[in-house]
Each structure stands twice: as C-alpha cells, then as structure tokens.
Length: 263
Image (tube, rainbow, N blue to C red; front, side, top):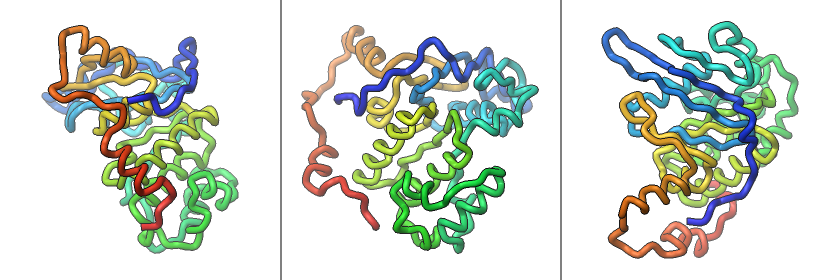
C-alpha cells in the first residue's frame, strides 16, 4: 500500500525516551526492560497482541501507573519527579465510559476544559473534528465514528505536545476509519506528536513513521513499516496471493464516497 501521507519528523529530538522499563505485578512481569524513543512530530505505533504489555507501557508514560524500574522522560520531564508537568503537555484518549451520556457536546467540552483548567471555545474545538453540527447533541446519540472524533477532540483541549490514542478506529466503518486517519494526520501536521495503538496492521502501515512490536513484555522489532516489510521479503517471504495496487476497502470507498456519515 502507498503511504497515507509524507511528512518529516525530527529524528534529532526524542520527545519520549524510555530506558529499561520494567513493570512487575507480584510474581508476573508484564514489561521486561523496554527501551525506545519517540521523536518529535512523529506518529509512532505501539503494536502487539492483547496482554503484550503495550497498554501498561503507555499508562506508565502517561503517569497513570507506577513502574517497577527504569527511566522515562517526556519532553525532558521525568515520570518520577515531574508527573504534573507531563500531564500538562499530553492528551490521553478516554474510553466511552468516561463520558456523561446525557450531556451535549458543548457541555462536555466545558466540563473537561474545567478539569484541565483551560479556557476554550467549544465550537472551535468541535470544528477541528467536524462535529460543529452536533454541538447540542447528547453524547449517547452519536454514531461510533462521531464518538471517536469527539474523544480525540478532548485530547486536544490543553493544546498538548503529545497525544495518546488507544485503538481509535476499532469498530468503525471504512468511511469513518479513513476520515479518522485524515484527522490524525492533520493533528500531526499542526505540530502534535501522536502515539497510537492499533490491531489493524494496514492502519499502522499507512499512518505510522515507525512501529514497535511488543510481545510478552519485550520489543521484538522496531523500525519503519517499509523497512520491516523489506526485511521480511529479504528472508524469502512470499504472499500466496498477488498483491494488487488497491484493496477491497479502496473499492468500497471509491463506490460509496468518503464524506462524513451521520449513522
């Protein structure tokens, strides 16, 4: 597949640095000495099966969970000593359970802005994710794609340097998924670093500058999608079916359009 965008990242500036991260739960080690950097203005994918340790890793970086050992800095701040400073410069995507279903979107925006201690214009925030027409709609009345876009909008309330998106397109139809890709790319173009987890490998291939595969608490591969694919091919891998220049999802989008859907 052709890359979804082409945008330079700053390989000289690691905005997140993780060194020898370990997380133990009693006699179980969930994270086993992970080390990696995330560069400024990068879309970085943390990939792996359920239970691999990627969510635990992100929660530690986000200062939501304590580590057992290792060193982590976020934009120069230490998770050990500067948790409050880190919280001011990151945005974390909430799960659906974090919203009051009977509040409308403007009310929810105002609520979360109050929690962040920032002044915002709710309509401007909703326009960023093309939800201005839903400003007075209750959260529970939104479609799956609209809920995900609103969730991403809440990560932007404090104008963060970094946002963390946890499987943002799970359960979405092809139009909503592609539109969310556009939104993520636009957020990065505006200067925000994006860290994403996803189970969709085509999504990671299209969006991410680099990806790290985590398995049983360890990083087993870290590189650009192109390099990882080339390395696999160099080992003699061949697909049993010819790869075409388009896939069935491309056909679907071409036939049905890519406009924002209400349902």
